[in-house]
Figure 1: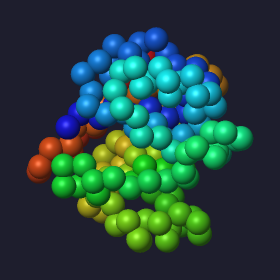
Figure 2: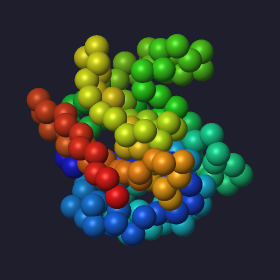
Figure 3: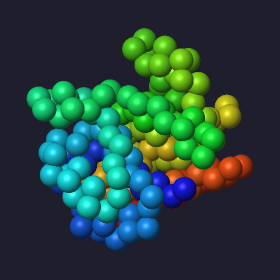
Length: 157
């Protein structure tokens, strides 16, 4: 399965995302959506699973959960906005991590793209999906999940 992964779009979707996500089976949005138009644009490409971020208020906060877990090709995937290696230390998130016991954690919030294995868990942050800012280059990610294989690729926009 090929997943398109985006986070921190902050109300704007880079036009290049449509090309990058052209062949994906599903799209994951790890929060800070800020506009339902972003989700609508992504849904024209593929089905979307999204969680809310710390800046998502009102209807977005009501519509999207703060985290969700999915099974993807036999792997347990946790989608959350604030995540990564800080999950274990966060008093609100650590219980979720223990409950879900994910193989893959997809998160955002930091605007810094990274992916890789740590302690048997694959962490992926697609980076800043919105407009460039504070010297951070926008990016998204492609996540391939197959039996026996989890591999992320950061795509710079």
